[in-house]
Length: 95
Image (tube, rainbow, N blue to C red; front, top):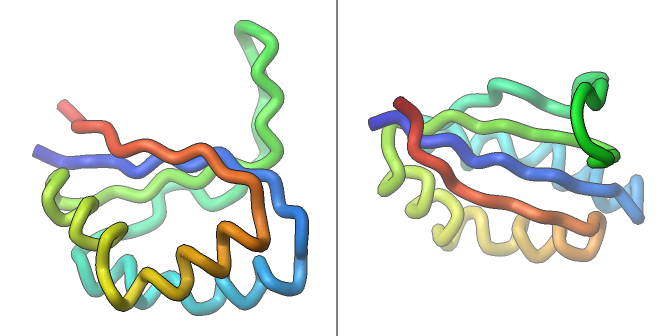
């Protein structure tokens, strides 16, 4: 079953985040993932959620998504992103 990584983030260090942004796609692709949403314009239609930036990744399944997130290839980039942005993230199964 397809899985999605959904990330809400607020960039606090643009230079560090740009380094992350340029390096992370190769790690995603290595686990069969791809971008579905990458920081496009948002419009709240219900509630009071005001996200700064949304990213949605699609992976073949939850195991691949978890393997990517926990991989040694992604680990240094994860640390970089955590310094560059405030983040909420989750993995959700598709239908």
